Image 1 (cartoon, rainbow, N blue to C red):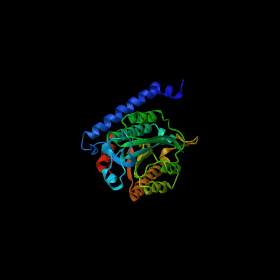
Image 2 (cartoon, rainbow, N blue to C red; image 1 turned 90 degrees about the horizontal axis):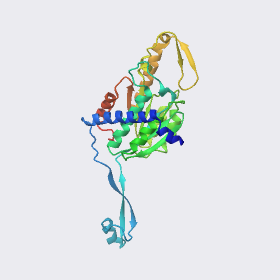
Image 3 (tube, rainbow, N blue to C red; image 1 turned 180 degrees about the vertical axis):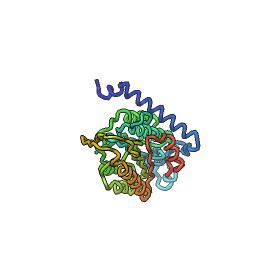
Image 4 (cartoon, rainbow, N blue to C red; image 1 turned 90 degrees about the vertical axis):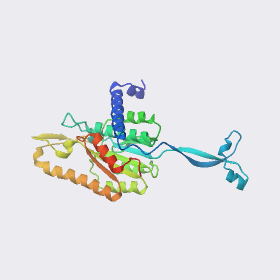
Length: 303
């Protein structure tokens, strides 16, 4: 059996796609029913180029001003233009696979999946084009931006089949994305930013210098912020084979301080670069985080 067909018929994958579809649609429709309804009224038609008139072309598209000046009959060509082209870059590294110690809390990956699905649905609802790229140490997959409503199913499929693994390497991934992204578009980066790299802000600056609007969604499990563990615990890395046994009480304060410094680092550098920064813990209801963000921007596609 073809591998793709096998995936498409996998009950677990189909269930995940259906669940994401319901969650994202419900979330976004709920937001749009309030004060955040899009100002966009649809895609527009813009002038693209001229071509010589040939029998069969519509006469109404002849540029008569050009004809009067040059005695040449040329046809105006038009193309559909969406309001915005957005690409969502989602961290699919091993650390995103962390499962919360609280059974009532959505896992970090499921939280990120639902966030991305909701943002994608919102863009398409606004007649904007949206694409999705998955990465760990390199780009794993890339779905180019499209604005057709049917494009949503392709994004849901990519989200449903992804399995977190590998190491996070933001700097090289951002650099490799620069050439793929349309100028004056939007890049949304969704990650836990758990990386040993120290010059991420330089790569973010590169994106901004290209005229891109950049948005960071920093997603962490509540355990990763509060470090609530007790007793001797063996911590195993989700990105390599390393492990360490220790008493969490010995490092709790230092750990919490380190996480807060990381959050401050991204918040500070993003503010300097004109990048929107949104920090979300998995214990925060997604609709609450998105509502707060949309209230700040007034409209996700506004720029």
